[in-house]
Image 1: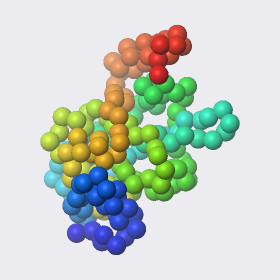
Image 2: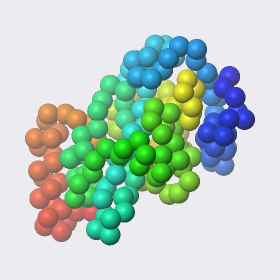
Image 3: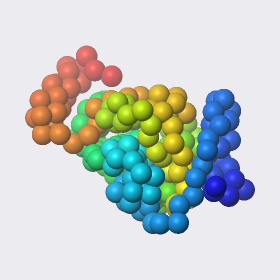
Length: 186
């Protein structure tokens, strides 16, 4: 079991407990820096790994709004699709420093919850069909297993199609963009 006294793990456990969920956080001896390594460590499919990736949306006054994406380990987030889904003009991947400043966590240890301020979270719809998914618990080599529905609730996430897909990019993004320009979007 991972050390619950670790401040990052304690924060994740505390947020889940406030919502009535007890997490079983597990530690792994093998490296889990990639979705494939994490899947091997927990004996799961790569798609069952809920990677947490931070994006930012620039604001006119120069500040950045964080957008946390919970994405299947088998997928990559399409920034244009993410922007269209959220009604943003543009989004880009956050730098490591921006991610740490905006969420309190950095790099490959980013958990799906426990941020110091309210943060928009979008969950990849491709995580939803699985019975269980695995997410990082805030430190390298520590993760927890949870149902997609509980993960969505814990993270206050909105489920949306955010994964790169040739069909979605060619079909949905132009339609959503036109709707936003016409004023019928978010």
